Image (cartoon, rainbow over all chains, first blue to last red):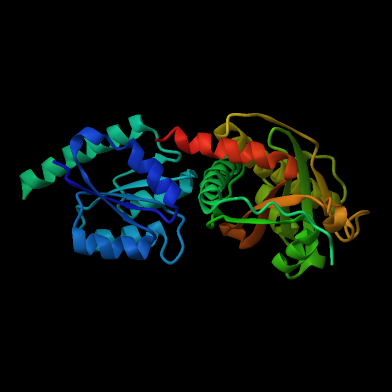
Length: 129
Length: 215
């Protein structure tokens, strides 16, 4: 079961919008990071079950941050939440190990579907361990 | 000193909302462009600035260091949200863009001048990027806009030199700037969405409505 969620986005408004789409009744612990570098550091420290990752960010972008997190844990569940919906961007970030991509602005329904899929993957990973 | 009336009442929160909206809008515009032509657009974090229109010529010149070598596509839009979409490319981008588009229907266009072809390509790309970007901003803010036909200027065009001065200096400009790169050809460009005094009150109200829909 998902307990900890990390949201990585340089925009405080984008973090707020995403957070508001996460179901309140699940009592998730939600953490935030303001760029890819901060996200990687917080991932190491918090080891969240799911990461929501933006792509276009200063300091360290979402591609590099995803790559670094996957290098630490290749079962990490990274859901990319991005405005960059070009087919090339989506296929590239999936090659980097992203679990799935959702389009900005976020919708409650798409976030709930993504979390349900992440829960299934998490159970599989825990079962295999 | 230019007499300017600057509305500085934009809060940091309102600028953050506008930045995220511009990010979403330019993402959509890039995806639309990628669907039409084989091009991959590298995006950057948008920058939001509020300045007096009188400072706009200097702003444009400072932003584009080689201003004299730039081609400009300008498209005005009208509605609750009104202003100008301005796309700037280095002139050298024209030839590179032709090679990307060579395999497309442009090959069959009856255009006998390379310069004309370059202008047509700037116009087409400007029309797609500005239209999709402004259209998405309007959609997110629950309104609609109409557009004037885009215009393209280069250093040989009438009005090129006076373009930066063509804005009413007594107005406030909200500038949404994003820098992008067409990866395959290493082409840099800059998109400015500039809105004016008349839209500010409407914009502030609707930025809060947009965010409130998430609370």
